[in-house]
Amino acid sequence: MKIKPPIILAVDTPELDTAKAWVECTSEFTSAYKLGLEFFLRHGAQGVRQMQNATDADLFLDLKLHDIPNTVTQAALQVADLSPRFLTVHASGGSAMIQGAVKSAPLSIITAVTVLTSLSEIDWVEIGFAQDTGKSAVALAQMSVKSGAKAIVCSPLEIGAISEAIPAHILIITPGVRPKQDGAKDDQNRTMTPKEAIDAGADLLVIGRPITQLWETGPEAMRERAKAIAGELS
Ligand code: C5P
Image (tube, rainbow, N blue to C red; front, side):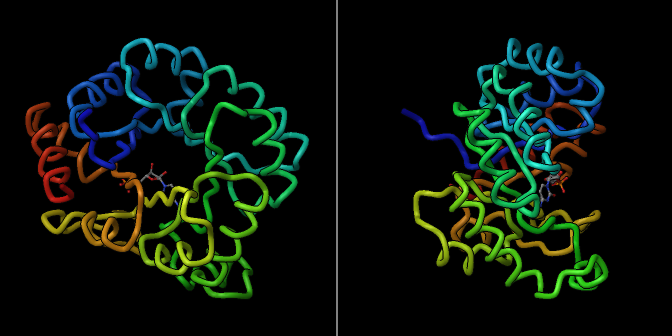
């Protein structure tokens, strides 16, 4: 069996047809596609089903649930029948909240987002966290795993410390990667190249704009960019 490249395509568009086209033209070089708030708030579960009917690829449903345990338990229940392979929650919602999501969506890998990769150290202090982003991410990851999360989302810079602190079977997923040929960091602050992130111990990479911005040039250019990044990882 051919193992697919460890790339999750961030399908950050509210347009259903565009989302389908992005997944179709990159699916050979990706393991899963990620639908987030932008898509979900526009199309809801019905739109997700249309995506699932259009592709066999695994779904990473990035709703980053974050509320009191009862609300997240109920919210996770509403999307559980979509059976996304991954469903995200914010780790900072706490242990009971994560346990609620795990209970409600038993067929999905509950994936806890530690510290958003867009946040700088200054942003983190401004929000009011006492520890630095690195220490906070490790503590959030440990608590999430104890609460039943089977995957952790963290910045590439935190992969090393987190992988030492949690069991090896827990997946480490990292967004905020930027290929060398892509000078722009966009709104990501704590980045590495895809190859550096995999070498550091990431199991899967979430990659959006470095691939999807090529859509303006055309599907072939987008496909070639996905292929080039996948090639760097093989
Ligand atoms: O376009 P880019 O590659 O920056 O997209 C990164 C994706 O990963 C976005 O969809 C964003 O929501 C998501 N993400 C992130 N940082 C996290 C968790 C998820 O950037 N900590």
